[in-house]
Structure formats: structure tokens, C-alpha cells
Image (cartoon, rainbow, N blue to C red; front, side, top):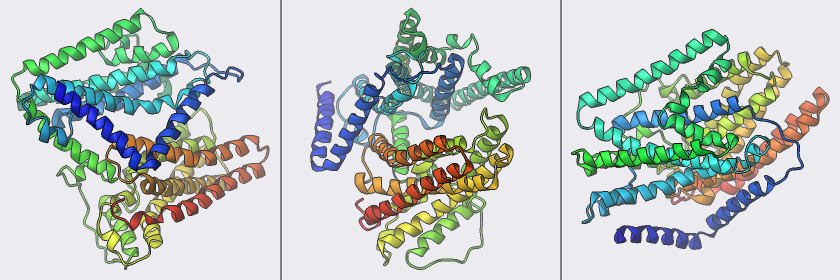
Amino acid sequence: MKPLFYIIRKSIKNWLLQLKHEPLKLVLYILCLVSLCFVFFVNKDTSRAKSILDPMLYSTIVGCVILIFTAPDIYSSINKGATFFRGADINFIFTAPISPQKVLIYGFIKQIYSSFIAVVFVLFQGYTLSRYSNIKSYGILVIVFGLFIMLIFTSILKILLYSIASKSVKNKTLLRNIFKGLGVVILTGYFIELYVTMSPGKAIISMFNSPIIPYIPVYGWVREIIMASISGISTVFIIYTILIIALGAICCYIIYSMKLDYYEDVLASTEYKETAISASRNGEQIFMKSGKKPRVRKVQYTRKGKFASAIFWRQILEYKKTGFGLINIGTVIYVVIAITVGLYGPTKDLAMILGGMIYLQLISNFASKWRKDLTNQYIYMLPDHSFKKIIYATVVDNIKNLIDGTIVFLITGILFKSSIMLIILNIVAFASIGSLFIYGGILTRRLLGGGDNIVTTGFMRIMILVGIVTPAIILLAVLYSSSSSFVGVVIAYTSFIAYNLIFSALIIFLGRGVFDNIEL
């Protein structure tokens, strides 16, 4: 194991030395650390009034998060496999005279680091959770521990499932049918609860609080571990933790007890992982890098554009091929959310809808069209000013935000019976905050570059974007909550929109060089 530990030590040392040559990244890391310390310091404030978080609602949220972030990933591993390794590991470690067991331990250590980075973001939710009196003082640490152990076990389970599926087509079909059967069971349970409660929200809460869930291996155990943030650490918490660790160890043993060529199995999944990381870093969809071409429609299109405007018309052509103009699957998701909230939402306030849409924008910001353009060499060769390149490369994303906002707030506004003026204000506010996200993303690209570590760089980008948009959200929240008339509401929205537009223009000026240097 000495050579492998040497590689780990050298990797950490090289990462620290890299920060020495990139002081801006070091400053950003320090700011994130200070922000994290500030969150825990604020949590010590006991003078403010606290509310009580409904345990059933909390349990439902935890159950949904675990299901959404694990089930699709585990199912996909049947076909694509899973791996702890990167391309460099295959080239150097797999060819070294080291036993497969030691190589797996090395990969497991690397996975611990990746899982830890992935759940660090949860620590920043400490302030939100501290608002509830029934959340234990150590609750946020319990949540992080639960998610951490879940991610590690999921990685091991994905390797095991792929190893079983790769032995024969029959095994792969059987595993797929098992997953589909479980999906049918979940949907059946939901519709039964829906028939009983006659409410989609109550049906989901009732289903995810079934007394049999704690006895479901891993899923129920992880949920009960995280629920200890309310109920407190007990013997049950320790038992479930031991069970998950023991089951993970058994899975690792089974992987090597099976007569499989582990390296051959990992090779294909590592290759897919590398292409997926490359696609995510460049803002592309994964199937575009994995050899599977998306289905496109044949369209008649003659507009070509000149110089920087060619970027705009090419993006329009892509949307026409993959959707109905600028309306795609993302728009459909927004429509479904708008109708659901409009019919079953507990509060009829467009400002709350705007807040939820802003959160969705933060998540979807990494799939913008301009990110893909950065990987195309031609954009740097266009004989035009960098300012024009930025405008033409982002105008499609801005138009799409306007269209999505119009659809969402028209639907919810009609269902809420809101005034036309308020609907228009929310549409413009959504489009303006969208532009701030877009140009804030360009600024983070200018500051951080492409980034070799997609998890760390992505986390840093999110933190910078949150820092950029937080003042706008606070401004809107303060003015909106203090307004006693419709005029006050108009002033709140106008101030919010003005902030977004002013800072978007400032960021365009600061980040305009991103289309000049291909190294960025």
C-alpha cells in the first residue's frame, strides 16, 4: 500500500502547491471557509424566535432526497457501471504490480474524499435548520454523516450490480425488472394513498412515513440515521450505522469472490465517467460525449449570421432541432411545477413561486448554451469584439428565461387570480435574475477557469453565484415584506430588477475576456 499512499500524499501536496500559483482560488477557498464558520457562529444565536419543523414533513423531504439522488444513479449502473477511479489511475495503477484488493482500497479512499466534498454544501444549510427548535444542536452533522455514508455505500452497490449484470444478459434483464417492479410498487402505493387522502401532498407524506420504511435495508436505515437530527442519537442510530458498514463490507467481499475480471469491468465505466465529467465541465449533455447521439428533427433553416451573430443563429438552430423552438423538456418541467403549485400550493403568493424558480435556475445554470460554446475553437477565432461574443452567446439563454418565466407566471398568476401588473413584474424579475446567473457564471469561469476537479470547482462556482444573487434576494425580501400597498410591491420588484440589470452589466465588463483566451 505504500506506493498508493504515496500517490495520495503527492496529490494533496500538488493541490496545495497549485493554490500557491493561483492565489485567487486560495482566496475563494478561504472565503468559503470563513462563510462556513460564520454559519456555525450564527447558529449559536438563541435570542431569535424559533419555529417547530413538522417531523412528518421533514421525514418526507429526507426520504424523497435519498430516493431521487440514489435510485436513478443505481439503476444506470446496471448498464454503465460504476467506478472509484479516473483515467490516470487506469494508466498507472492498473498496470502496476499491485493486488486488486489494494487497488480497491485506494479507490475507496478517493471515494471518501469525493463523497465528503459532495456533502459539504449541506453544512451551509445549518442556519436554515437552526431556525427550528426541534432540530438538535448537532443535527447538521448527523445529516452530513447520513448522506456521506449513503454516498459511499451507493458507490459500492453500483460496482456490485454492474459486476452481476455484466456476467450475462439474463442477469441484466433480471436486475432491470426488479427495479421496474419496485417502481410499480412505489407508484401503486402512492395512488392508493392518493385515493384515501384525496390530496397529492398528503398522499406523499403518508407514503414516506409508512411504519415499514425503517425496515427497508439501507434506504430505511439511512433515513432513520438522518432523522436522528430530530429524535437524537440513540441505540437505533448506532445499530443502523453498523448494519450499513457491515453490508458495504459484504458487498466488497462479494465483488472479489465472484470470478470476474474487475479491471475489465471498471475500464468501461471509468471511460464513461471521464466523458461525463468532460461533458459536465463544458456544459454539454452526457450522451453527446458517450457516443449516443440525441434525436433531432429535420428543420428548414437558412439564417447563418455573420461574425459574432453566427453564435446566436447556431444556438437557435440547435433548439429547433431538439425541441419546439426555445421550448424544451426544461420548459415542460416548469409547466408541471407551475400547475401543481397553482392547484395544490399552500400559499397563493407569486413571490414564493419566484423564490422557487430562482433556486431551480441555480441548479440548471450549469447547462447553459454559452458553456458549450467555450469548448468550440471557432468562437475564439471569430474576428469580432469579445463584448459582442458574450452578448450573442448569451442572448438565447436570456430569451429562454423570459419564455419560461412567462409560461410559469401566466399559469400560476391565473390560478392565483393575481393582477396582470404583478404577473408582468414577476416575469421580468425572473428574466433579470436569470441574466445575473448567466453573467455571474461567465465571471466564475473567468476567475476559476475550466477546473480539473469538477466537484470542487462546481462547489466554488455555486458559492460565488450565491454570493452574487443573495443581495438581490435580500433586497426583494426586505422591501416586499415591509410593503403595505401595491405601490410598495412595485417598488420592491423594481429595485430587485434594477439590481440584477446593473450588476449583470458590470459582470459583462469584468468577464468579457472569457471568449478571448482559449486557455480559460
